[in-house]
Image 1 (cartoon, rainbow, N blue to C red):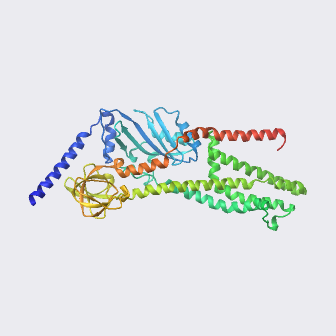
Image 2 (tube, rainbow, N blue to C red; image 1 turned 180 degrees about the horizontal axis):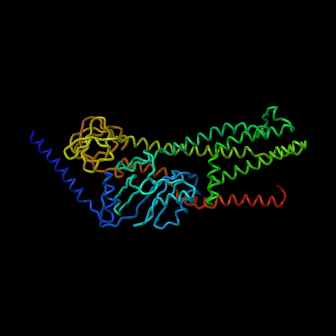
Image 3 (spheres, helix red, strand yellow; image 1 turned 90 degrees about the horizontal axis):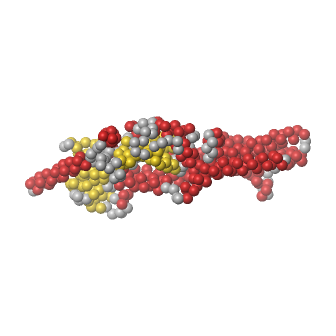
Length: 470
């Protein structure tokens, strides 16, 4: 019995040694990539580089801020057109993410990209750099090794580590909460304003304070006072919109700001005319002017936009919540055997070839192969199987599985972005940010839509001025 156990142990050690040796032999670097490999090695990333195959250019991922429509995405792309060394640009206004694919040996700096995006009126933060060779192997560069202003990140965002599955905070939840704080207060002021302006049209009574031609000025002033809080609550739309016009990159915020602002400005002018008319006791003119107020139009536009963005943020938050649930399947640390010693390590520091010890109730941190012991694993979250699956030496186990009973040791084979759980999370993110082919047409239309609408509005104003109908 003891002899069998000794032979089994020797076999396991031989397997471990041969595996580590094969891993070491498979990693060869050319001088052009040795620096990147050292960075990846320091970050405990799993890297395999074939020096006989030329590497592709780097891939940079940025988290953007302030994008509200396809026109914003087009503006960001235009801001990056002057740069040489960019092979492809993808900007998604829904997830507010940007991916740059660089040509090999590009000299482009990340801080130059951030500056260009900021000049276009948006925020940008470098989130990740990756280099992929022709075989699809990834060299990951940690967040703290990045150049450019992307390094200024929160602890939650600075998670470009070997686990490959941690990311930025749930930006959809932040957008939802911000839009929610705008929508409900706006609705509180919009409802009485709509009652004042539209109620009499459907036979609803008005308070006596507002009835009668001689009280038209009070009626108009009340509308104005109900409008001001909504304008203040949604002031960011005006700031972003007029700023985009100033920078000659009009977006949807510009269209909203111009439409709502024009209705507000026109109504204020009419309000002053009503005040002047009331002093002259021209009741007929006062009645005519009271019908030319459009405060409710300005408020309705802003309230409905806040509602739309709240619903959009809620949809994003649900996707972010699904990703967060997948992330929770990973333990923060694991028990690892290395060089004859056993100790606990953060999962970011686990290396390919390490022996991971799993005890009852623990979650598996990385993908690997079971080498000793046996157990039943809860694989529901990873494979969807409702019944625990028995695992014996030689079987593959995946990160995110939960050990039910028994203890076992397994060899770490896949880390970071190569792990099954990381790929699942990446697929969820790609699905949430994927765009239909018609989206490209929307981008082209968006580039001319806002300027065209504003141009038509100005032309209409000029015609009315020339015809004397204003």
